Image 1 (tube, rainbow, N blue to C red):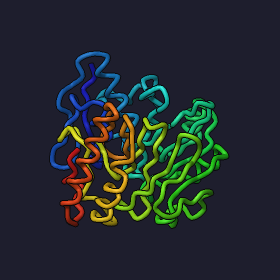
Image 2 (image 1 turned 90 degrees about the vertical axis):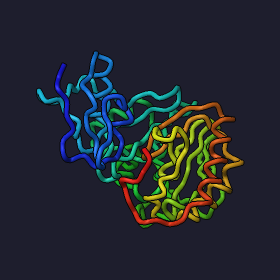
Image 3 (image 1 turned 90 degrees about the horizontal axis):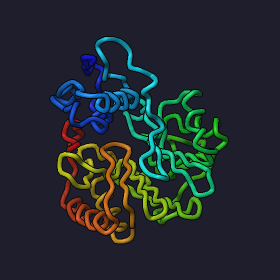
Image 4 (image 1 turned 60 degrees about the horizontal axis):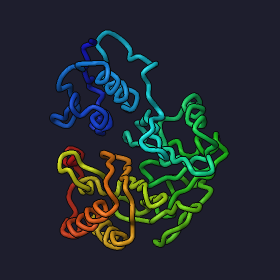
Length: 289
């Protein structure tokens, strides 16, 4: 087995740890190896971490990672794939492909741009829409939309990050993208943050909330809420009783699947906890990954 390490380019985005939490830990604001892989399955998980990591900081000491073990796009469920190849220009955010019953595909936020990756994602089906959750994840949106001849979506509150968007979501009420897919404006993390809900099953939450491995629950990243934690609390209170989903699929933080009743209970509890929070200085190391 190769000896693996994490180099000093790590930006503590948590991406690699999501794929191999038993192998990669966090210390002093960066990832480090807890132990070496013990079998082929663990080696494959490390390669998933490699090809998702925006800085390629997870490395085998003997040389380059095996490109044949690049698993992306990676199926998470029948209708959703994880893009991998996270971009430094989105602070390492995750992005997804949502496959519709018609066979068409929507891209939620964007991976690193490259024509070769775009062709790989297009193999999942014709991409009709690129849905941006907020300004921090807008990088590469126009390039992917143009490559696919797809519509680029963003909320008016973050429009300056994608001023040439084809579809602008306005106001604070839900907007139907297509049958089964709705955009729910959720101001808080940024003024124009949006949550996309698909088929009452998949919740693409952007950076509004995520699943924390530390707490084993839904959480908000209060220390990196750029616009207003009070606005986020009001947004969550508004939607907590309405949204029904099984998968939380965030930009940053972990993904998780629960029964819809349990997920709804946890979202209501998160809304109540968030009401008690107050603004605090930005501190990336304080996120409870």
